[in-house]
Structure formats: C-alpha cells, structure tokens
Length: 246
Image 1 (tube, rainbow, N blue to C red):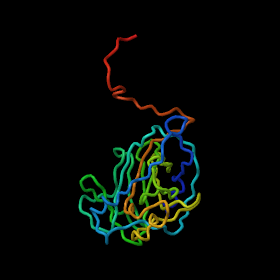
Image 2: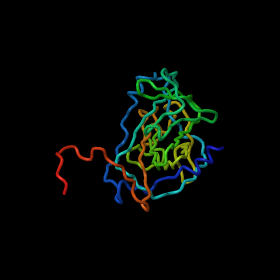
Image 3: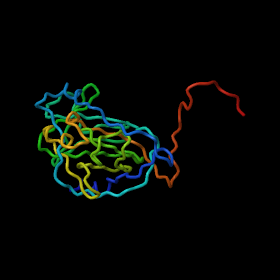
Image 4: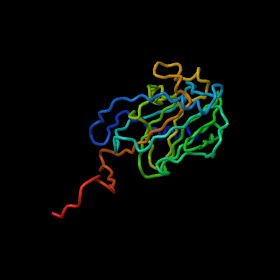
C-alpha cells in the first residue's frame, strides 16, 4: 500500500519535454533493435519469459513542463530476465549514475535479486508473478526515467526509443512503475508470462523477439522558470594552444 501511495506522489508524466534549451530536439524515433538473440545465449527456450498486460492498478499522474539539460541521456542500462537460476553476484539493487540513482525490482512480498555477471545484469522471474520497477534518487537532482519492457515504452506501448518522454524522479524520492500505462489514472500491471502471452507478442507495436528485457534511460531535468544548471567542463575544447590574455 505504501508503494501505491508513493507512486501517486512521485510518478509524474512528462508529456511536454523540451530538451536542452527552449526547443525540442530534432531527432528521429529510434526503435529498440531486437535483442532476444543475445538473451537466448543465456536462457533456453523453455526458460524464456515476457511481460503480460495485467490487472488494472490505480496510478494517477499529472503533466509538467520540465526541460532536459542535455539532448543525450546520462546513462542507459539493460536487465535481461528469464525463469532461470542465474550465476554471479546477487544484489538487491543496481547503482546508476555513480550511485545517484538505485534501481530494483519488487514483487508483492519482496525484492527480486539481480545477478551481475561479467558486467551484465540478470533477473529471475516466474510466470504469473507480478512485479514493479523501483527507482530511488539519492541526490538533489531531478531526473527523467524513460523505461521500456520487452522493447515497449511503458507510457504508451509504442516501440521504445531513447528519446521518448518519461517519468519524473524527484530529488531524494522514489518512483514506482507498476505497469503499462493505459490512462491518466491507471496502468496494466506487469506480470511475468510465457513469451506467447506477453503484451509485446500481442500488439502491433511489439515483437516476441524482444521479450525478456527491461531497459532504462536517464536524463537530468531542470525547471525552465529557474536558471539552467551549470556544469563546469574540465576539457571544454579538444585542440588548440594557449592564447595570451586579452
């Protein structure tokens, strides 16, 4: 219950996101490529999972006008999941942006362990198990979380792009994403399933080939009514020699 209440306060949808300055970036939508071939190296066909369109969950959102500090994301990460006993170091959460943001996956009862192996992260799920994506902000910065499940944007069910709009993660706060958004007030819960039953396999925007993966892209945000954050550059130019003072 606390997680539901937390999400109501923290999950704020960015429908109007301007990047960098006052103009939106001129970028083409880039669909996430098929990555199931890589995942298949780690999970047998019988172990593969996808994410089903689940029960309706209350999740009210509001629209805000915040701007991206930079056109390109600060960080991009991927977690592969299957009904498989993974080997490697088990952790309760992933550290993103050098610890400024923590990512974890929870069920109704507990956190699911994430397994790190050779720099890659894996998650063991079970068909029929509901889960949620949780992001915790350890910093005073405001971030935008662009999340995808099975190659689909969790906000609108379209083929995911790095440049899609996302949810606001406020300073020192939590963001809980419980499912695919179906309206301004509700989501369809994430439920592990066999790939044939996954939402991605049953919508024209998705593909069964992309089941079994969770993606996250992070941008830093600022309020256009306030001064844009300044970041000192250590090497502002790549070439040239010192010029005499004027």
